[in-house]
Image (cartoon, rainbow, N blue to C red):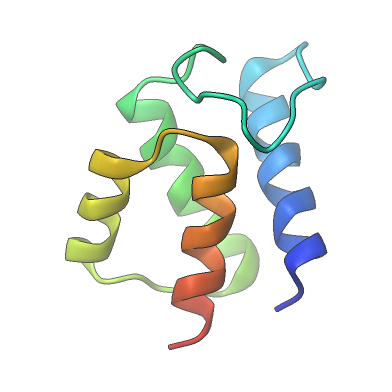
Amino acid sequence: MKKAAVRAAVHHFISRLLESQDDFDDNASLAQLGLDKTDIEELIFHLEDEFGLTAFTAEEDRLLKTARTVKDLSRFLLEIGRH
């Protein structure tokens, strides 16, 4: 998995959720973008499907508790892609 492809997919799915805001960087706060826990969970599932990845429930739960930025989502996908 290439980092640029993961980053692009994360930005694409977040932009779709936000419906109109697609000008944000990797350090943008998920909360400030208006994403709540349910939105983040939905993003995780869509992104895992996009890349054919499966994370353990414990890994997903950890991400839900610790994800603060757009970059955190990309980092998580790259991490589980190495398994």
